[in-house]
Amino acid sequence: MDKTLQKLYKNLMQEIDEDDISLMLKKEILHLMESSGAYPGQTAYERCRDMAFRAAEAGEEAGFYRGFRYAMQLCMACRQ
Image 1 (cartoon, rainbow, N blue to C red):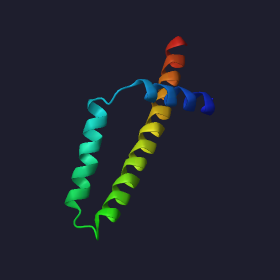
Image 2: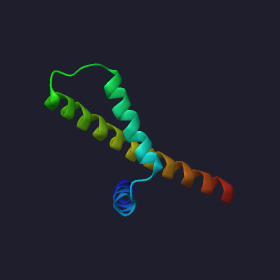
Image 3: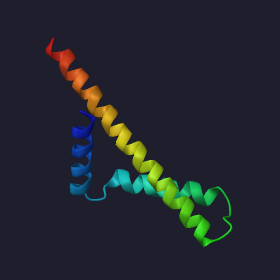
Image 4: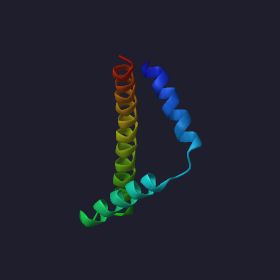
């Protein structure tokens, strides 16, 4: 099931253009980084920014899995 969900998520993400939620998430990450203070250099800033975006993507994927599982449980409960 996990591999199937992973494939479904990857395919869905390839088909979807950047939406309002993605833009909001990017703006929030950049805002948090700017408000956290100075970085020793551009390279350090870019490294931290990239790690923040990867962490957000991982959280988004985990949220998709949880939401899908919850929806399936809800469907099963409604059928009973």
